Length: 141
Image (cartoon, rainbow, N blue to C red; front, side):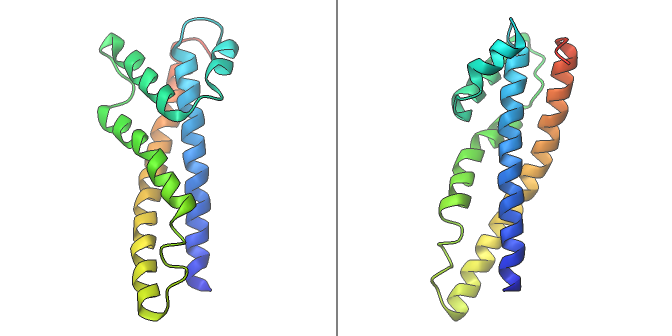
């Protein structure tokens, strides 16, 4: 079904972007922490995004020259909820419907997916740039 091909593609690309962002956030935090980078990475690599993000925001704003804006942190905080919707509910909200109900629900979810995908692509690029800058600034490259 042609409709679903684009939906599948965007779901996959969005999940990839969420994973890349999460990994970069952990690298940024590990890079900003004092001590050995490899040990810092091991310290955070298996932690959930939420606690790492909270600790990073505190550390990032500790010198009054943050690398990420409050809006970036807010969007980063939304990743978990929307990613959970994407993985567990995005298909189920239209999959078992028929005819016009299917079409309406699909279009609604598709638009939600497109919006989230766009936000994640932009955020991902921003976070990647911050990661590169942090690694250079802290001599971690």
